[in-house]
Length: 40
Image (cartoon, rainbow, N blue to C red; front, side, top):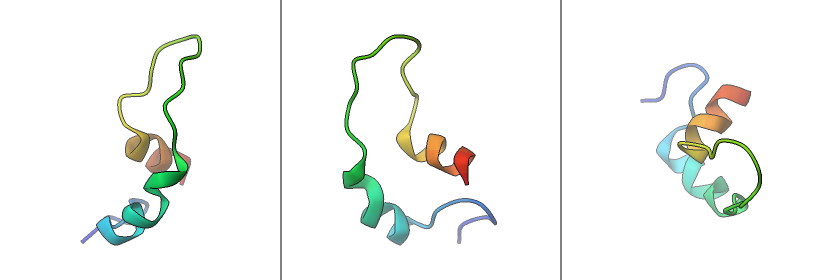
């Protein structure tokens, strides 16, 4: 079971395809899922 502001595994499966790899400046993200949980 997901914590209050964390996506469940089922919800992550739905939105995971929306994230693409970027080759921009700065430090790369460790995990797209962690980034999204932080935004939520």
